[in-house]
Image (tube, rainbow, N blue to C red; front, side, top):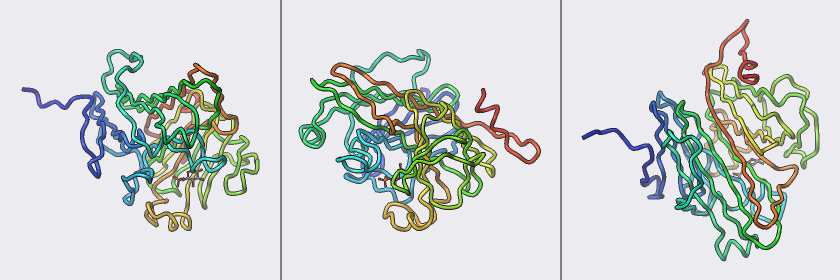
Length: 310
Ligand code: BG6
């Protein structure tokens, strides 16, 4: 009998919560909790964790899991009448029994989850919809999240959205982001005032909480110490949020270690400035694709251009 593990396995995680383990071809993997449809782990072929998950994360409603990839919908942030970042991140999702057909037929490491609002949810946000999310580990160990939101209501509705990825990094002082230079951003720390990025690359010396607008579809996060670059590609999501709470805010968060801000960076594929509007019967699709590549050194500098242009 083969002791090979299956590409998709449903098992129990922290606090006995259901989770789905996805296994790629060469040892890569991902874990998805049905609570929040929350990706909590993404590992490369060498079993190294690529996502940050707080040691203090609370795996219990109503708190969303701190780390991994929470889904912000139907409201990003606190601008609006709903709770911060909406409510699907702290609801239980189900496995979708009638998912759309797979796009890459040879790949078996994917799962489809679905969320439909309950009567209670409809009291908070009075629209019917079906939110389907497919999580896939590609043949090379890449992680892909594809959301489809269908308006099943009789009226149009509008929403904002983000895939909030907590990348695991060696140290925040060793990291820079390429691909957002010269863009306009809204500064969440200054009541969403609009500024233009002046730096050649984004580096970190204090709290940052910004919504970069109309960004390119590819963003690189370079980790100088690990000599590794995360590449974030996105479709249907024009904006990108960059967040690190830094020391003071970290201390005020009960589900986050005091020093953990040094080892995480959120870069979020998002649609925030211009809300998405769906008419009755319409469906919206948005995809985020994450990969990790070794960074190469050229004259003392990491060379991300190949990544961004490739
Ligand atoms: C980021 C926001 O996306 O999420 C920040 O830009 C916010 O403003 C952060 O503080 C964390 O939010 P929460 O609700 O998970 O603590």
